[in-house]
Image 1 (cartoon, helix red, strand yellow):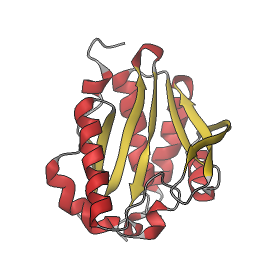
Image 2 (spheres, helix red, strand yellow; image 1 turned 180 degrees about the vertical axis):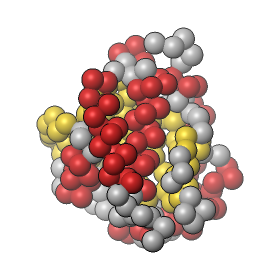
Image 3 (cartoon, helix red, strand yellow; image 1 turned 45 degrees about the horizontal axis):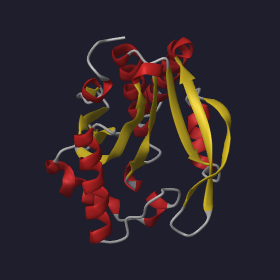
Length: 205
């Protein structure tokens, strides 16, 4: 385990020829705003972005979490278009246990289904295992989110089980959260699978 704490190490510029992930800053507020106002993005999120006030609270919370070391918040840039495509984060950083979570992830609707998500997951997993030295990377999603669950299975994440009545949702129901994980011993095959799947899609087409 590296001596530098994860809260500092986690935030770094991550990129390949397809996507760039950079730590969030105030300069990202307006580019991200341009893609945030679509109800389809937030169906399974624990918060909603329906107007400018919602967005300001949402963005301010990301900045605050980044500054406090609660999360390492990344802004996703699609290199085909040069545009901001969405966001993803490391959170629940349990360095002593070698465990962290990848989540808080969303993409604008124009960037969905084009391989962007695969490359985001690839870069975040690679950084977690190869640089941070993680032993376990977790994901969780709403048990009703069939698309996200299929995506996690497709990258090789292991479905572990459901945490019932995990948290309240804005519409009043309580969410059942389902957990997935990738372990260090699985990373080589998962990374190869993600890389092959990403190369099979031409997001610039």
